Length: 214
Image (cartoon, rainbow, N blue to C red; front, top):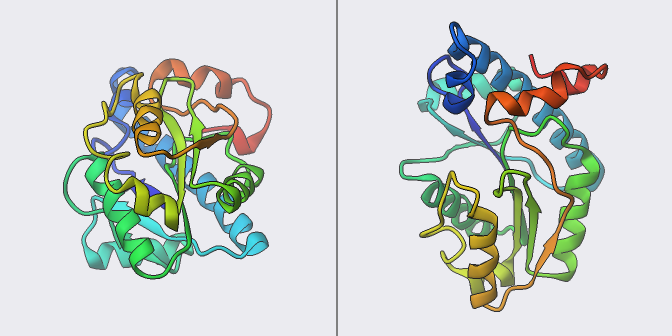
């Protein structure tokens, strides 16, 4: 499941836009759109190879606009993230996916210029042998979280509720909450997401078009 925000100026990547100066909201929206295309391309290729379903959970659009956007992106399965903070919206996606019969669910965002299909394959392999998979981010958060059905039953809302979202303590907070529920987390490689101007530096000089964010 990919959590995505409509890439409109002023409605996405606000922390990044704030550091980009004049015209920052427009540039941030362009970056968001490029990152989303990259994320979906990787996820769609991996879903074809590995046989998992792909769902785009959208924030910031009504039903009609969401459906049209999904058609433009080539995504068949879309849903609304719904109201509330990040933890509430993520918990809603867990409940929806497991409630409709999923055995393993992996959540990612769209801030990952270096995301590869191997990352998603590793996440699902991890869930074959354990209840929880986390991809730590360099800023102290995480870029991927995955649960299998037994893990979700044991975790309840503990991994989502009361976490210090938007801080460098999110990853450790999730690990602590998992440990309190007896959930051992398998860790993926550490990645850098794209939230602030300084996060652009590794990508602006890249010769690889797949990693170029705008």
